[in-house]
Image 1 (cartoon, rainbow, N blue to C red):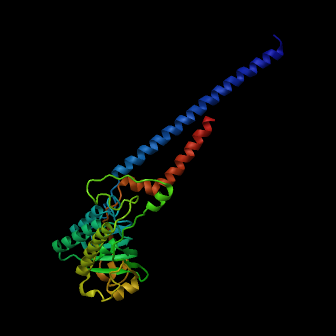
Image 2: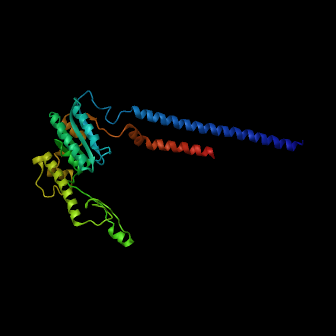
Image 3: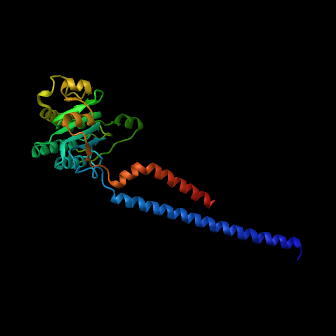
Length: 316
């Protein structure tokens, strides 16, 4: 065997050994990344299981304080600002013997009149059950429609001078596609048992009698809204023809109209009106898992993506 053949074989053997070693290192790194991700996910969800829900840490403080319940975002079932969550927070605040008063921190465009009505009724019930504990509503950027519906149940309402307040009205919106369907040559075939069962179907014409029927429903709901506001605000409301037309006002205008009682923030109301400057958040919000996913989702996602990129690079 000549030297050239021997050298070539030696280099081939050496190359196989090196490649094999590199493959083993790649596999080891891939498994290391996998187990790191698995461990991180396990710790993440284990922490979520034992982390208290929003407000649990603060609930039942040892010194006099103001119990705050947040009403943020759309008021609707299965949302953070659902009647169930808001009511549970209110009950915490009223049942907390060290809470001087309950403060509703509102920043919401409104939502379901049913959900808002349930909260309104519960505030009234709790005020009757705990007559010595008052409820104050403080509107942030926005307290409109169903959000103001809730605020009207409070003993007093405050807002910033630039807050948007009011919108005491009811709205229903949809689309009608009958003209477009005619142009396209599309025929709508809708079968119902009951002449009004298909009412508001966007692909069918809207008869005048159905339109009047739906308007009656909206008007009835509007009158319920107005009655609740009048019951809550009483003689403080100004005699203004635009008050219940769905108009929205600044906090400064709302004060003149009697929609609110003064200008202030949660901190100033707790300090100057309630007399208990320390605020304890007793809100009931998202589950621990959802909260963690929202708060740490971006960083977790970025880290996970980096790990996947590294794993992908190792597979190449």
